[in-house]
Length: 185
Image (cartoon, rainbow, N blue to C red; front, side, top):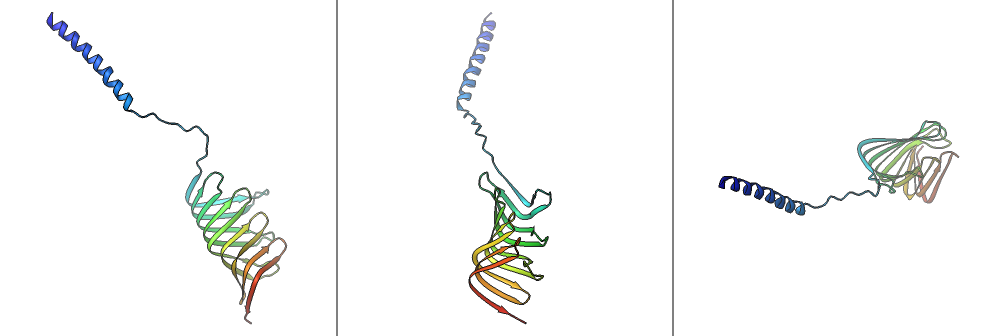
């Protein structure tokens, strides 16, 4: 009989002890917080290709980058970027830069750091190279522009200027200020 009382008391002690220890353990656990704000997280990618197409389904531009990062409302940022786009006459333009940014609503690509862009100048059959530190390509309007110092090299000619606007649709190139040039025969 003492054995039954002892076994019952031990059984009750185990139950009470497990409730007591279980209750303490729950108090030590921190609550989990879930963010249901619906905010987008963005994305990033390595060795990525980004293509925007026009209404006709043909690419407006193709952009290659070592790294692409997008944060909602902040546009898309690129490291070691290469941009290929076609002007209204069907000529391909190739650009590369250390970094860049695309504002998705405007289709404008800002290229930064050791920027070079190559293509056939409007109204000419000569290939040209534009070199600057900052350049904007408005892919939808076919406009290349900068307010920074720029060097234009084409068929033995070297032109330097501060600022440049190239309107590819209208075959118009305008050097803004401080223009200096050298022509070789």
